[in-house]
Image 1 (cartoon, rainbow, N blue to C red):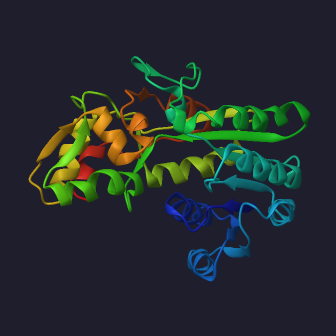
Image 2 (image 1 turned 90 degrees about the vertical axis):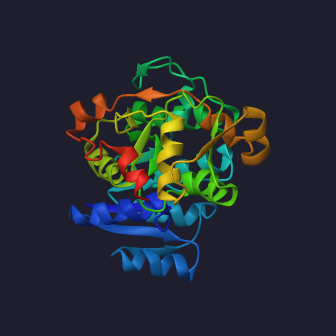
Length: 285
């Protein structure tokens, strides 16, 4: 299948392109710079020069493809919807996979699935109108699918490295918020990539939580990250107010208590996460 990918040179994009090619798909990927173009070329994809603001480029690339996987992070909900609309117009009846995230469910009060009510922190509240508009295309002959990854780990660990490993190394102890008893819905980067590949065959209007099904506490994650950082498991509690000061709005997302199940993707797509011991992976860096 011919697949067009946005965000291909990023953390999740590289893993997804590699998985798509491993499964025999031909990939084009948008690239904003020669460096990004070289990165996607190295993975076996053909670069398309442009960015999310180049709606004509996105539309034309999507029209050449049989499916689109939209991974890039837009600057705003308006920009994300404009890009999504251009690509859905282009791909027509082909599969369009849009990236959301599990943070939109807020605190889950136990284990939930994709039918849970939304209660997003401010940082991701903009996602609702975008995802609703994307999924509405299913009523008009389109084939939209939304994948909602949990907090990614493995490989470069972008968010965890930025907000936990790095500050932990500087302070001599990895932080966690409050008592650290809140759960995180994690997914390994390679499992997330395989979910995107599996979602190419999903029914129109499908929504999948991309999670590993193992939901450790934030403190357990902090201890594991501390070990990987050579800090012998040392951690430190910070208040939510302190976290907001240090991290910005994402602190409220890290403070969520989330437990989600991957059962729907397992049942409908035959996908199953292979990485089921996130703490061991995180402890080894």
